[in-house]
Image (cartoon, rainbow, N blue to C red; front, side, top):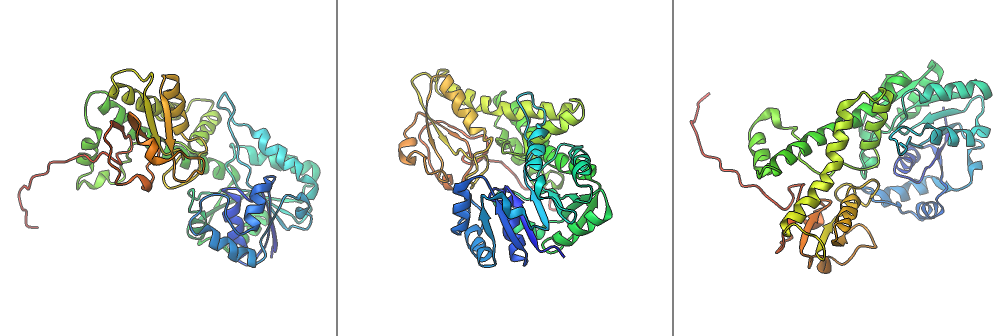
Length: 401
């Protein structure tokens, strides 16, 4: 049974919840990270980012032996090495597989015949086959598996224990070891081939990105024709079971959905037209929000102050990676506005009272902190957080069944 697990990139959003969970499951866990501040923060018992019950759970894991370090030599006697390096996309929206292979090569000196290598973050389809061939040249007996992370931002500790875990490998020995490892923390294991696992992760995130694009496209259609979208939204969903999963509009951003959709498009020789269209719709919502603010202020933003509430990419979180609020901010400034911004989860935030003295407000992130605020100035609220549509419903026939 594998005892010592080392996680490369272990103090980040993917590696830290996994490392804490493994430690609480009785494994010896070392987290390797090049971010010295993150390493110090973790060793002091605090998460470097918001995580539900994070600090308390981390402190229990530290008591169980979890440790973080910047020293790659911690890999030397590891039976399992987990890589959480994701695959970014370049300026042409193509996957940068070199980022994964470079870090993989950096740690190759620690691979032994009985080492199990687990890839954890999103991979461009075919990356596992590429890594398999690389391993065959230097150490063909090293085991290799892909076990994609699928948890939601901020609740990783909770979801790791409750979500099925996909495990894939090229051979039974690698699969069985990865299965045994994750069986200690996951309620069930799903076996796939490496290519299936790579595609599953990309398709799951692309599907969510498409859902948001549908909602955002409908929002644009309604709003640009003078119709209150949220009255339509409430009418469509009112006591109508087939509309229960109807997504509401909002800025679709973050480190995964856009990136993974573009990776799937690249894999399909850029013939994934739905994905590219979704990108145009979701990214275009930022411009629509600015246009609405401009219209509300008489068609000109020069010399005007606009409040931007929320800079994180999702509600009640401090993660600003790929947040569209920054695109809104840049567009406002290019149009001549002075942007006053606030986010309760960012220490450099401006004071909310001062921010709310602006001429107009754009809700960038629907943090619970903004619930109940009243505004004297125009508000652009693509999320439907402040604006509550009034739906008129009248009683009809009372049918006895």
